[in-house]
Image (cartoon, rainbow, N blue to C red; front, top):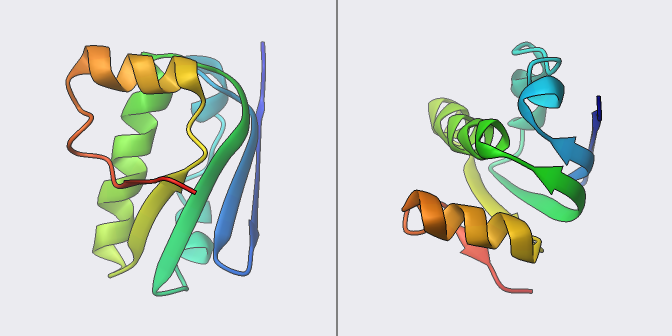
Length: 100
């Protein structure tokens, strides 16, 4: 099973690896507090190699958690396969995706 490696550096949350039902289950809820100490965090998805609907659900959950900490969250460098999954799932208007 693939794993997600998540590193926060100067307000950029870089995710490497897979965002699947196996990898997101390993992410501890206690980590979110440390991620959202900034007023804005950009999630860089450029190195995500695989994602499924559980990974997409986790992204929506992450957005909800950021709101609890008054942190503005955005997603950047979304891989094409993940963009298609977002569109097919009908949630493309819910995720703040930046084009950079």
